[in-house]
Amino acid sequence: MCAIIFKYNYPEHNIFDAFKFFLSVFLIIFLITYVIHFQYYKKSNNLVLTVDISRGILKIKRKNQLIEYLISDIEKAEYYLTYNLVNDRHGWLPWDTYHYLDLYFKNGEYITIPCFVVNYNELVLPIDESKIELIKVFYPLIK
Figure 1 (cartoon, one colour):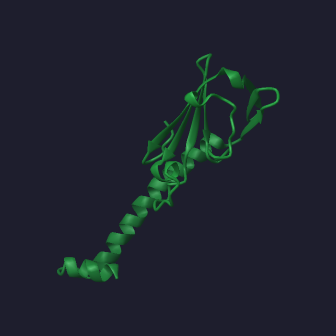
Figure 2: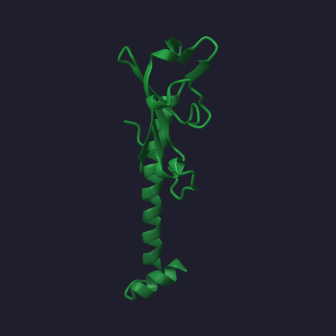
Figure 3: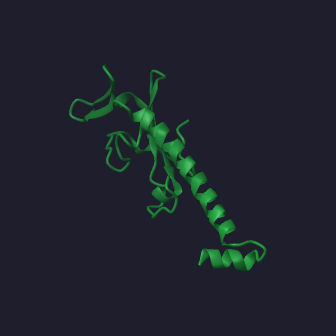
């Protein structure tokens, strides 16, 4: 069907030109998705997040290093979500389900938690709603 539309709109081209066009679009989308996936994989590699609500502690383990923060020390939580995730819609782009969380602490430190570690709707942090910010992005590349 797409080849017929391509042929109809551009009569001087043939089916092989349409194939080359769609292949190049596919490769561009694949490369864009690969960049995000690789970045999220590197950020989440050997990262373990544990939330101990009863003691009010957030434990972050990366490789052999364990860092503990008090949940009350969280100054701000920024969720970077695609437009489809924020609006709870089905996504059409391969990166529509990617998202990450930046946690900022009172001592000036921050940590990035990609969706490979925990999903945004599964992480329950007992912090004030005013400290949580949802940021809509088209392409959720970790800054």
